[in-house]
Image 1 (cartoon, one colour):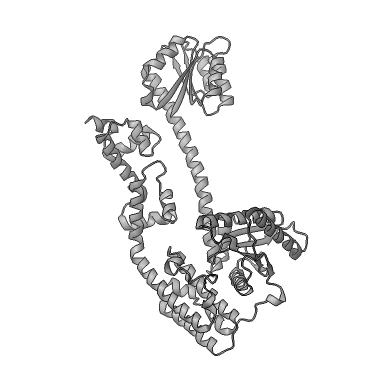
Image 2 (cartoon, rainbow, N blue to C red; image 1 turned 60 degrees about the vertical axis):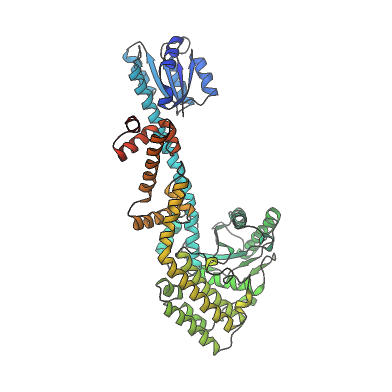
Length: 536
């Protein structure tokens, strides 16, 4: 609501204006009075005044001097000047001081009200622009977090993107890595001390570890961190040009500092697996698979250990030809993405048939498991499905490591999960959109306040606002924003007809800040203003 200050050394003038104007109908909640510029400044120091209406001719400090001082100290206040002297020099000075308006005495009520309403509208426009700007900054930051996570997951799970696309996305999402530069990956499984926490608390811990890593590495490395699809934290690091020390020595020092800080501040001992250096983004998928395999085989989960995969004892160059079939085009991800379920199953079956003919180690079973789960996770997430909805524990080796105890067990598991995924996505294609529309309608019916927006609804149904709008339009033929407005207008009709609420109260109830804007939308929708509708 608006707060206004009337200033005139002739107190009957301010009293008359204060008493004769219907301020609440204009959206003004508080009217202050001052009989001098000094008294006005004291009110301005103590109250959140939005509009000052001041006489020009006053003793000691006149209205022009007061407006000049207000312009210096309270730049957002709108000033309206009153005077009985129609002197061009006054008007000229008022313009120079950027006064909002200039009114001659005796004051005409209609002219005065019109001037104040214009000032209010100017303020509300400025506030709405500031609010939109802040919302854009918040949305941009929120969207970047989601977009960066999606890009990281795509790269980790083996999706092939051109270097041009990745370069543009890194620039757009403010990811401080460059295409073709050397990078390395740190994989951090969460310690067992966090295992009893709920999902929200675990997410906060992951966020905290990422922030600690940024603080530790910022001087010597560009880093990008994100939660991986296999429930561990991923940090990709690229050395800055200022790094003169041996990269292995400096990296070891910083990683140990990270471990100590997490232990001290978050009360958890983390193990870290460090990949070999690779060319970003080309080697990111292989580095991720090697790191996950090392976590599973070395048993480093939460043990405060540090493992470099470039050490000879951890070199993983020997991959049998049968496993390489998983990575040859068309890849398993491509086959699943194009819903070639039969071809995808044939590819997996051929790998297991070949492995039956050769000697393999348990590590090779991990390799197959990771490749298959990467493909399953990617295609499921692309369709908005979480893997725990398909199988609660089938994708988590920390829960059930029997999956990779034998070739037959892994083969049975792969076939079973393929069937479950196929069934889920087939059902998903048929029913997901209608379920999403139902969720949207429930959210709007329950919450019709100021926060109701496409962005708010999209956050609640875990979809990007643009994608949600596209689904809603294709399913209903009406844009989501138009639906929200329509529901607000229907609510307005009900309140106008069945309640004694003031227009400004209905405006606030529906989430609008400006009664004039609400009236404009209502008239556009129904052809009459809220006042006209209520009168009839």
